[in-house]
Length: 197
Image 1 (cartoon, rainbow, N blue to C red):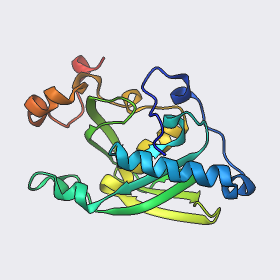
Image 2: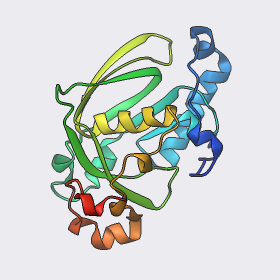
Image 3: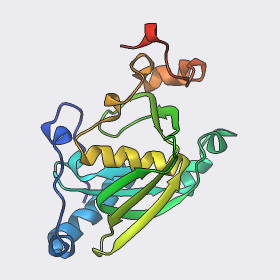
């Protein structure tokens, strides 16, 4: 079943999602929701989807970065983004820790299924560690870097009522059409004091 993806302005996107108990995770309702979220993410298509994006204020997200998506990138883009395939996974009740001692931030363009048609440069930690539960209510530790780390941070932000526009370099916010025309000319370095806003 394909679910409706909520767009920016919907209250569900700004709520702090609640954690789930083990019994809730294993319930038919939540198991069906996970399947529907996977189908919705793949249909979009996207590399991640959080429950608040489909109207459920629950700490659940699904992630999958298929090799097919990476193969469609222009030459060199996968390496530039430190991007490799990520098999389908479910993260529930996640906690996240930046792995870099100095919390190195890497700025790069990011989009969101809940801000359809737009993109902006967003700084994110280069490496993260996530502790969470999977769809079987089993504890999991994920260590990720590059694009995978970015996806995790983006989806966990959704579970805390945040969108990438809360973290972006605001002067880089643009439509995807303009990104196609001008995105390669936009520096990914932080804006100077006169450019913030």
